[in-house]
Amino acid sequence: MKIYTKTGDKGTTALFGGTRVLKHDIRIESYGTVDELNSHLGLIRDQNIDKNYKAVIVKIQNKLFTIGAILATDPKKVILKNGKERLNIEKVSAKDIVALEHEMDTMNAVLPEMTHFVLPGGHQTVSFCHIARCVCRRAERLASELNTHEPFEANALVYLNRLSDYLFVLARKLSHDLNAIEVKWIPEKI
Image 1 (spheres, rainbow, N blue to C red):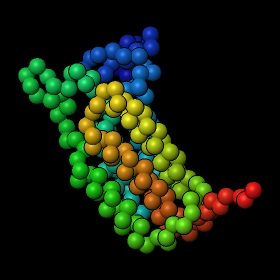
Image 2: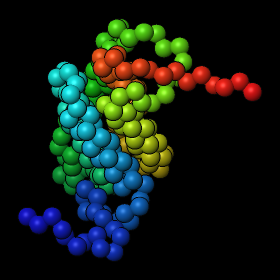
Image 3: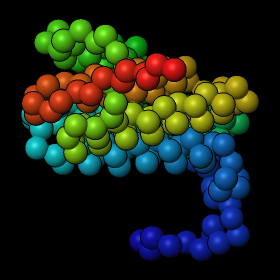
Image 4: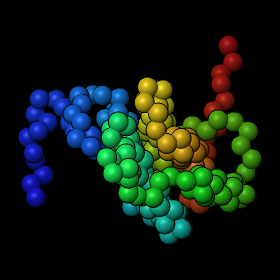
């Protein structure tokens, strides 16, 4: 199979279902940003971190592929002519969202109380988490905009929201594990 198809040479691409749209369509921006996020998570997973975090990140990456597939599907072609759903994959469930919340609660149980905003940084691995969190928020904003025009499965949007929270808590937990200093943001007085 060749990787290049030449079908996108004029600035369009195909959604799952065959519909062609412009490469800068909000739908493409949405799932492209989810893909970018997934790559950042791969970078975090490649760091010298606890194997349990790595296992959770692999699960998250799989869910992000699911979300990407949802976003890449033409909403007019979700249901096939035979009445079956085009995406024959496990969707994002409330259980997946609760799993992220559980991971956050577990990490938070050993962290000091947060009294200020935290400046990103302190350790390269922690910075990678903060970058992923920011990309996740962008993915969520784009998906939210898409959802206002062409609604899709609600749990996908909720998952992105919860994932950005998870990445923040993971950054804090990795700071703790790596003995990195968490720099509090203290606004300067006028």
